[in-house]
Length: 104
Image 1: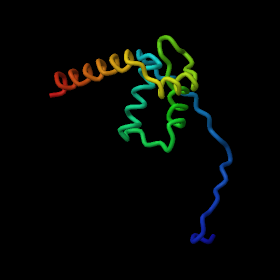
Image 2 (image 1 turned 90 degrees about the vertical axis):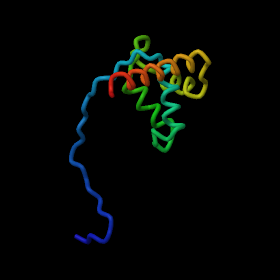
Image 3 (image 1 turned 180 degrees about the horizontal axis):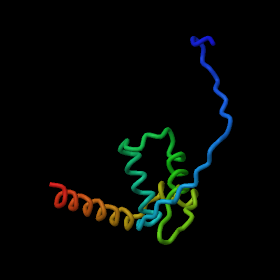
């Protein structure tokens, strides 16, 4: 075996594991806006936004959407209304207050 050259490894079988979806009380718009914030600030570092949005739409559910449409999530990611921004800001403040009071 010549280790100086890249080697191809053939997998004999693929394993498929069914994971439960993560349930959130956020709306699809709020979830999309939080993802945008994380991406814009460099906390999510995937090459493209679409990769991240595919994962979110596949692995998250909201109280109103048991299946999050990738197109809906993408539209809300790029077009955030003021109400969503206000609600996410309130949730971030709530998190900061929780952090300040419970983790001293």
